[in-house]
Length: 407
Image (cartoon, rainbow, N blue to C red; front, side, top):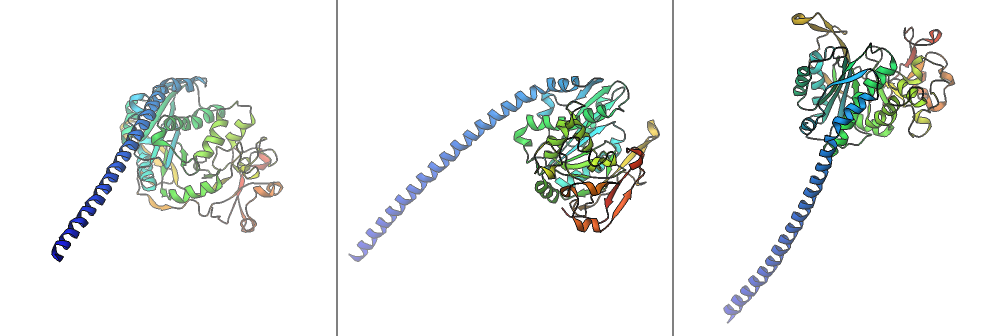
């Protein structure tokens, strides 16, 4: 009898366990079905976004021509913003770094290994390169397609043919420095599902095509500093003063809109001065009281655009490379006398040891908010005078703090 009770209890127990197991399985199936429904909804949403992206991509051809028509004296020769190209960009993760190249092609084929090495060591596969290249008689499409392959499909280009010399600043600034960003902006808008970004922490490096990189850098440290400052430019003096390091927010909110604005507007004049890597306080070109052109510095208006961002000197990360000879004997020579394909030095934290920039004279009259910390001024100033292209002639040059400042 006891044995029977035990057996009965065993069957009762097993039946109860089976019932619980059935309930668990039912709930599991139900949860799985819900997950499948959610995935189907996500796929539908992705398909909808992809369709919207495709429509934007198809419209880019007209936008490229429309962008060129806003400037006199240029004509689009080649670009790879066609639908069949942009759909195949090798974007496997959201770009942390955008390298914007603009100017004459020069020695790009010699220095591009240093660019690729810098990007890969700094950001893995999360980077993208844009090129706005101009010439008087055009450039061979095969050269640009080879660059596309070299940069592993993370490379977009627009080549333009210009009439006349690209000497006026109104041309060089607006066409080149706006154009290289404009290409990146079109990619971001067309492929926002793949190229969406945090504008404060996404790094923008703008350079000429003949810049040879000597270092990689700590992207995460740079992103954290740019996020804290919101609007900031890190530059390099003299050897590459048209190159700068900033974030997407600074370039898209403060520089690009001004470069595309009316050339007589305050916004355009402010963007021009903010486009040079050692340009704070007008690069020594004007009196401190005149250099804001009616646009306040960002630190004075709590980072409300439009404003002029602080510019600090930072990593000496690159060097210009000049072409030597022609044809089969063509080579390149970097102005630091080193080959362009040397292994990069260790990645550096570009937010450490930054230097302030002040006018050569009259800087004491600047508002307190615009001056570096008192301890940095007590460390002394290094005079960088007699820079030929700075105006007025009686006040050429600028000064930098000898003491470095960590951001």
